[in-house]
Every structure is written in C-alpha cells, then in structure tokens.
Length: 125
Image (cartoon, rainbow, N blue to C red; front, side, top):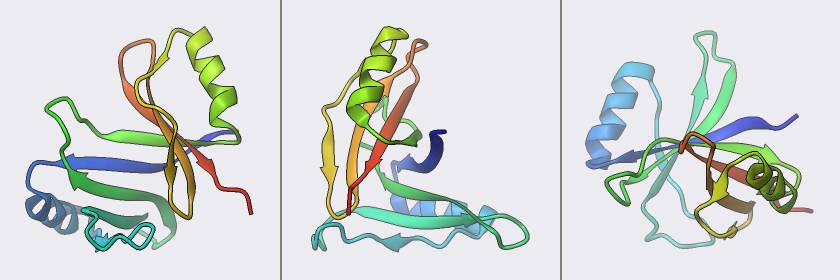
C-alpha cells in the first residue's frame, strides 16, 4: 500500500527554520548534494520517535512562492498509473514528472480539495 515516505518544509529563512525544528524536535539537517550539485539549496533530515526508532525522511528548502506549503510525498510503484487514478478521482497534476537524480521521479498534484501533495517513484535497479 502506498505510504508517506518524505515531506518537504518550505522556509522563508532556512537557518531560522532549521533552528526551530532542531530546538523543538532535535532534527539535524544536512545539506543534500543531489546529482553532484553542491550549489543545490536543499537540506535533508531523518525523523525519529522518542525511543530512537526511525521515522520518515524530511527536507527543507527556500520557499519557492507565497503558496508553497508543506508537501507530503507518497511512494507509489508508478507515477503514471496513479496520475490516471488521481484525475479520475477529481485531482490534477500541477507539475510535470521530474527526475530526482540517483533516486527516482516525483510529480506534484492537487487533490479534490486543492491540497498539494507529491508522488515519488523509486528508480529501478
């Protein structure tokens, strides 16, 4: 069954946002280098419960637009197959399917209530 695997937090001030989540939840963020690009402004972190058990991963980035909100990414076997299901259920794609270097693909949608979410398809192999 598809599950939320990753979420992104947009921030107006990334340093302030990182400090907030570290102070409140203890999340340590590390700059991600995707596809060998050291100039990418994206920070990754791994959540853990109070017993230290691993939770879902997260990312933080500079807010891209005023309506850029927290985005949950749901892992599916095929973005293309789920796009059809989403459209039939009243949702719509708002960004094209895009590669995530060395990981797979993502695509962003709106659900029937105009909530944004993403799908993640893992790269084969």
